[in-house]
Length: 116
Image 1 (cartoon, rainbow, N blue to C red):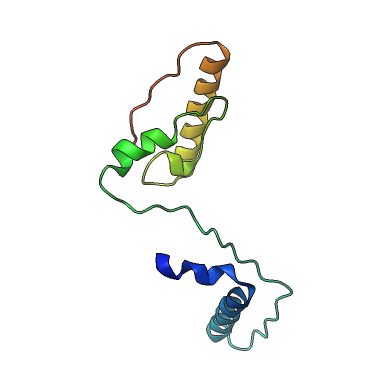
Image 2: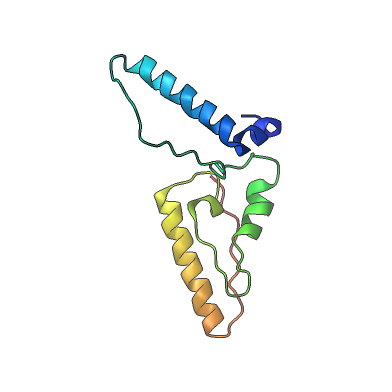
């Protein structure tokens, strides 16, 4: 969905229409399934996938994983272009080291940007 069209997701009527379309498409894929869901969940925020623009991985990514006082960030999306379990684990290890430095009163360790 184009960025300018995302406001469509903010009303109940439009999200119901999207749910109807998804159900109709599902029934086309599985004819005779007689699907009648009790409820449908639509996540309006979507996935925080960002657009790959110049400097994103070398400039922006290192900034978004820096701690903010007592708040530390560890997530697969804060590590680089590939969102993997391994990157999430590495992010958690990095955040733990940052917390340990903070608790010990030491300056935060600086980390280079992660790419590919």
